[in-house]
Image 1 (cartoon, one colour):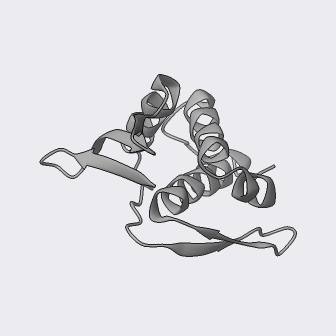
Image 2: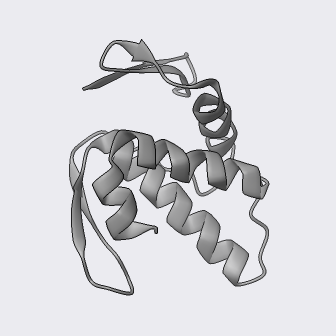
Length: 110
């Protein structure tokens, strides 16, 4: 179970998972990811499909948000486009998904 706090502009400023604040690196990446033009906050449970294997993973809104960011960042990177944030942000986000839902990470990203 997770909770998060948003500022007046709607940006998430802190996240707690099972009552514990998330690791500093994860929050650093999350804050940077929110600055991109392709950022999308998902507020409901959802499903995501691995485009290569076809495996479907059930995700919480937070997990879906992280996965969508990673997918969009990587698509831009692969096409040689502007990712808007460094690879460290992508790494922070994918490892945050690993921390939250290791099965989804293995099914969707790894």
